[in-house]
Length: 166
Image (cartoon, rainbow, N blue to C red; front, top):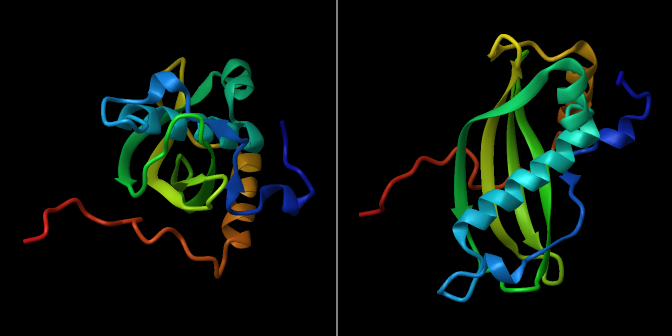
């Protein structure tokens, strides 16, 4: 682990590996089911956590891991079977124990954003089962990302409340 001297490695937004809509993800409406959007966002977040250095290896070595506290989804466009997509992840805010991420899922071919998710994730000591501060080297990487996204717009759906329009 430890911090990197290369700030360009922690630019925002982080872009995930290429993903593909699998046939078993398609529902009776003929498009990707909402449950698989959640799975795809979770997989995208795993790519991000691995890049930061707090993914599965970190969990194993330090017995600390990410817990989702709250998430909000916006479904904007359909993804169909075999379509390829990626995720973009921005940091909205950080504290000593949590981060607030904004995630976009976009169609690789058209560039159209299919969904947006925002999530608050907390670092947890898995032995004590209590929240725990991130190590300084993690905070440094988060800070580099926040600094690199200055002036870049976040997805417009971030921070919106859930309500019906009358």
